[in-house]
Length: 173
Image (cartoon, rainbow, N blue to C red; front, top):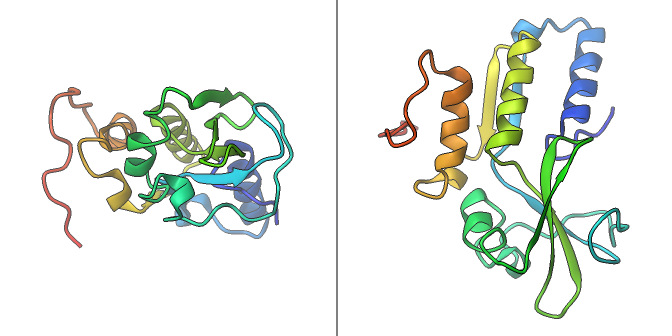
């Protein structure tokens, strides 16, 4: 099967087509999406550098800011660092960043933000899927996780709530 990576739109479209070809109706599918990012060591700085190794840096590794690559860790560390170079990939419709680690080696990280998540939620609705599921909800705790929760509200609530209104007051589990 085509690898969807960490939820890029071309990969999602390819997987949906494969399942449909197997006779699985969209109404029986839920699109799973990550509320985390992944980092890879790369051979050089920004833009198309080859990955050094096939596996991403382990979640929870000190390379991911010491707090994992969940959204809260990304927001608190990599995305808040003025030295982090943030980019948008038009083909994947997803943000990524380049940074140097403590030893000066280049790291590239891919993640989702409000804009990319809304695009994916809308794609799930357009495809007639049952809905979306996110992994893991704890990666988007408030207040840093507000963009993730707002992207869900933008796409799935009957009436979009104002930015300053709480979206979730309690998660049952």
